[in-house]
Length: 131
Ligand code: ATP
Image (tube, rainbow, N blue to C red; front, top):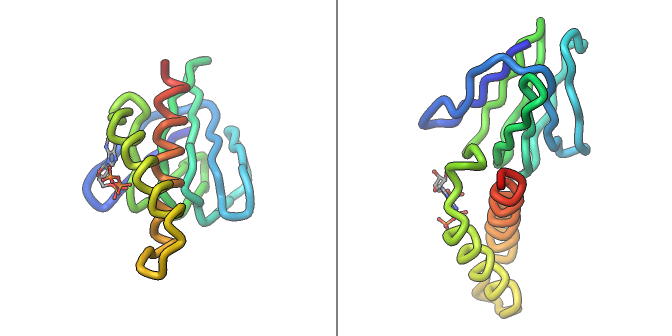
């Protein structure tokens, strides 16, 4: 089966895979060859693929997953392969978001800070697992 991960700017991944795991808004799911047609809105999370026993991790920041006729498609705002993530930048973003949330000030957009924190945390998770 095949998986394509596409953002506004680029094709992040376009290869044959044996297994796909991702995080939908209703929970995590896994897909193997022959799965019935399936569609899910994606959460901010990790998409994991297995190719000949080897695992690759991607961040997928929302969007939609579709699977039909052994073709998987992820359309997402933003996605990165684990090994292209700048760990220091993600750590800085996490600290910034945490500090904003700790302020409890009316000038802080809490939803925005929470989303930034979630993005930073999945980026860090993706880099850890790739080491
Ligand atoms: P930052 O505050 O560090 O910009 P952010 O969560 O606001 O983080 P996004 O808006 O999600 O960043 O992403 C903007 C662009 O920067 C995207 O193309 C994304 O792939 C890239 N990007 C963000 N953080 C990283 C990172 N840690 N490593 C590599 N690319 C990143």
